[in-house]
Image (cartoon, rainbow, N blue to C red):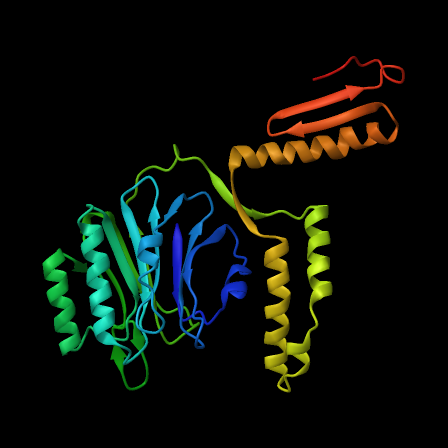
Length: 309
């Protein structure tokens, strides 16, 4: 699996960036600022290069068009994930969906458009007719044609996966995971070989300076927002908001290429196992490093080493 997407994650900025899933990292997300619940997000497998499409992200709007979008680098595939609340500005949803489709198909991009739009595609309605007309204009194809939400009294198709290039879709499964009343859609796609793409990961730096900054930020928090709440869940939410604000500011996520990351690990090992003991015993007079350059000046009176650059 290269990526997975969620709608209605209900998380704010700090909470969604604190999510830690094995081998996956947050690539793009929409978070509500003026109301609760909702939202959309896309996680990708570590090592998969993605490109932000900021000009498209600007189309996102609370409730009516909650948009997450990324481009998979190395292949012309754009993944668009949208959540739209029930009975919310449906004209705004259709207008923005056409804008984003028109812009990307004009650049010959392969699109995978998915999400929860709260439109039942198994039932003919003015909304489904409007979508069918849009699909005809841009040669879009439905890939899901069975129910994705089943209750005791209803069976509806609310979660969709739509593409303009069916050749890139190998298979699609609809599966109930028992985590929601909405079923999961699992899509297999054909993409270019990623072996020639530089491997990168997202990581946080837990250096001594970062830890000091974290403790300093925590020391500045009054926790007044926690004390004024009477409900235990509200107290916990207020605590987590304040804590995660300090955590994310002190330990920001940074993207590093694997070559650079390995170099950092080697440098940390060198400093811990070799440099620090020799500095403590006065066998090293001076040590400095900058990017790939390392300078070590040994004390020739206490070692057999000459100057090493």
